[in-house]
Length: 255
Length: 246
Image (tube, rainbow over all chains, first blue to last red):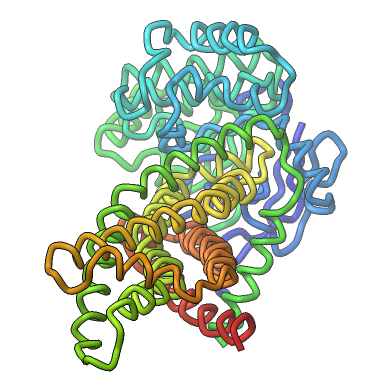
């Protein structure tokens, strides 16, 4: 479980996050949704320590991340797996070497054991044939899957995903979403996903936090998101003509 | 004020670069990779430039010494001192600042803008040490060899040019480069080389590491890396010469 308490963050005097309070539950897929520029990525990067919060606390299983020293933070970071928007795979390493990288850095596994583990993780994300390819030689969807394989290679307690299906076709997006959802319950980890894809919201959103202009505007489950009274969330959910028509039809049918 | 900010941030970065590595074996592998990348990868340009510059220095010296009162071996003496004291350690280092410096800044800068550095940090890896320390260590280790090779080839280029143009005989040239030879001059050149290798890698890495934005900014960082490492090399060339030769 991760608790975010009263987090504020500003850049050059401009407030980006304003008094954010969220609890991210273990074994659940916790979604942060919101418009572009609402502060989602800043919140995630603040949670993992890539940005320093102006005030507030981020508590990982009782440990206040913001009050830890560099070495103690490193220990928590070893329990974090993160999937970046662009994958952030290391260009100079093959797919297999990318997945093996954290293992070679932090474990005493032999090369054969590292290879076995990498193979297991790559098989888990349905990527058995790309071991020796470089990131430049694989598609966007494959890159995301390699990034997931790398993120889970160290058996993380926490999985952070920054727009995991951005730039992917709908079919691959659903594959990635399902993979994240399955891994969350399978490994019993705390997963936090940033997205503005409504398909993802409806597919995997156990807990949803809607961020609007740097503040939490709404929190709930995916079953509640379509019936919310929040005007801002409604504007976000029903932004497209298709969704507006769908809402009219649902209202018309009284459902 | 801006200068103070950069010096302060450079100092903080370097304090992290020289912290204990997560795993020595990984750093050792990186070190060997960087020797190949930064050292052996620069050998070609060092060879070509050294031979031709050595030849030009010799012809220019011979041109300047066209007097019956100056013995011909003085061409060898002047070429040797120009090459050992200044050309090989300083000019070759400036050229390496262009080649190696821009490569380091663009490599690290690209890693920054594609979030690869963030990925390292999230894994709990000290990204500054992992990315920069092997480069500094490799350059400090390999550059003195490059400079010694440069000195040798530049003198060989001078000898060949003297022979081909008839400006100085091989005997006079070889006598000249041995005449009143001071071994400390080579030590001085190698000390300068160590400092310059450190400056090239650390200043370039600094510009790459703190790149913000996209590909345009990576290009700017690469240019800044070359400009600032060249300026710092020239500054330290003056300081070290003053300290070591005065």
